[in-house]
Image 1 (cartoon, rainbow, N blue to C red):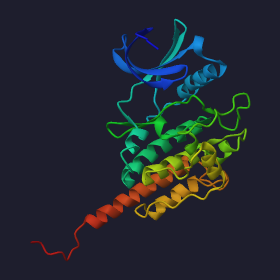
Image 2 (cartoon, rainbow, N blue to C red):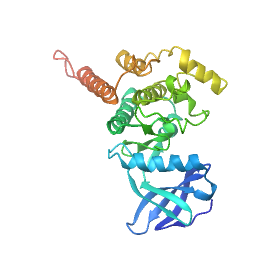
Image 3 (cartoon, rainbow, N blue to C red):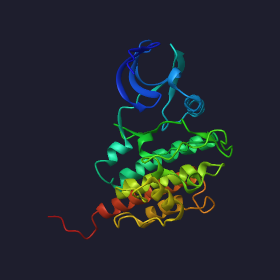
Image 4 (cartoon, rainbow, N blue to C red):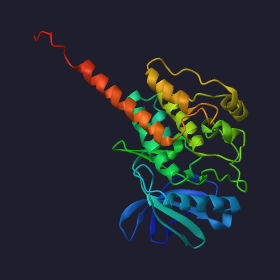
Length: 287
C-alpha cells in the first residue's frame, strides 16, 4: 500500500502490519509530533476486520495508563479508516528476546509493566486476549507499553458473534487453555495465563510448550505439565509463573492486581537481598 498522506498525517516509514491493515510512522502536521498510524483500507476489509478495528479504538480509548499506548486520534480519509497513537521509540519484546534469555531483574521489570497495564484494562472490564511479545513494546528508557486491542472483549461478556481468530504459529504459544478449548466466556484470567507464558519465555529463552505443528502446541497447552524453569530463576519467581499458568481458571492467580503485587514484592525482596550480599561484613579488614 503506497500511502503518502492520510488526513493531517504525513507518512514517513512503514513499520509493519499485514492483511487489510498496516502501521506507519507518520508526522502529525498540526501538532508537529511523530505518531504510529494504523490504517484499514475499508474497500479491502471484511466485516470482521472492521469489527476488530472499531473494537481496538473503543477499548484503547477507555483506558488511560502509562503502560498502555495512548490513542490520540481516529478518523476516515478517502476510504481509509485510521487510528493515530503515540509513537513508542524502542523495540518489541520479541526483538529483545531474539538476543537470548533476559536477566531476572529485567524480566521482572517487563512483567510488572504488563501486569500494571492489565490491571487497568481489567478494572475497565476489558480482556486483551492477545498478550504476546509482539504486542509489548520496550521503550529506550526501559518503560513498557502494551499494544493492539483488536481482539479485546468485555470481561464475562463472551463474543459468540466474533470467535477468536484461527490459531497461528507465533500466537498459539500464548493461548490460555480456555481459549484453546473454544470456551465462549473468556475472562481476565486468560490474560494472566498469557502473561505467565511470556514471563516464562523471557526467563528461559524459549516458550514452555512447543511442537512440530500448531495442534501439537495446543494439545500441550491443555494437557501438558509446565516444564521447570532454569535453575538460576529464584524459586519464588518459579512459583509466580506456575500459579499464573495453571490450567484451571479457578486455581490460577485470580487478578492482575494480585499478580502485580507478587511481582513487585519479589522485586523488592531481591533488591534487599542483593544489597545485603554486597554490604561488607563488620569484621572485614581493609587493605
